Length: 334
Image 1 (cartoon, rainbow, N blue to C red):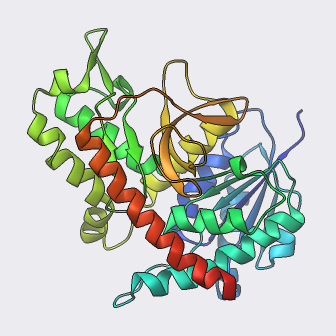
Image 2 (image 1 turned 45 degrees about the horizontal axis):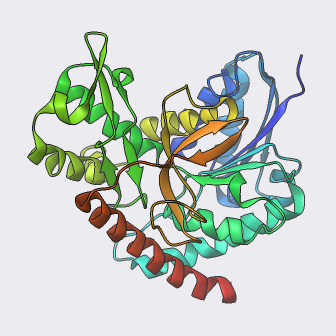
């Protein structure tokens, strides 16, 4: 048997983790023959709940799970990790300014970045889910200077999957028939879901999405706003944020880091913008189309950007720059 992969999930007593842990433990992410050590981190008041999660994981009797460690201590949680999935963050409470949210999260992700730097393997892959995900990821990256920047990414796969699903529903095909949608920018309502390079398989033939949908005003209007606002729509309906779909997106994201993207396909993830070919300022954690090979991502180059797309990409870059500036004021004092 191969050596176990050591995987940390933070916010492990929360509802996203509740769906996520089962997906990881049964082999959806690292393969059906890869043993796992699952490390679960949460805050001290949640340790009772976390004990229940550990019991449930034991009771699934899944053969890949060699050990489950539940802790509220960073020095235990971050030790010798292969993969860190940072789900836990301070949620936005009613009446809370975005600035207050950034301040609270800078503290968390500065501390976790430092713990990664101190205790984890230098090859660790770090995936940030907790919102504001892009800026939290940048904070962790900056706080872990000995780990390569390329090892950090944030989740925009949920938005990517939502975009695919909206096109599939519109055309009455499966989501698997839709390829190469792009989420540009921030995991926020300024993100730009872009289908100008996407294709759909209709009767065995790849057709551009715009040709298949034949409704430009929807593609540039209702489609974009539906994807941008989908998280809020789920909260309004369910009175809770996306959990099942978020967990599935995390599984997809980490699986692709581990095994690579299929030939001719790209996916969206937030990565460091340094040296990109799309005019996005350096030193931002921005969502791009990427391909992955040998556990290394590469931004897809040479995609044509029209004026409509340029405008949308710049708006979300500006928001990320503002978030970064605010967060980094706090980073120096955190």
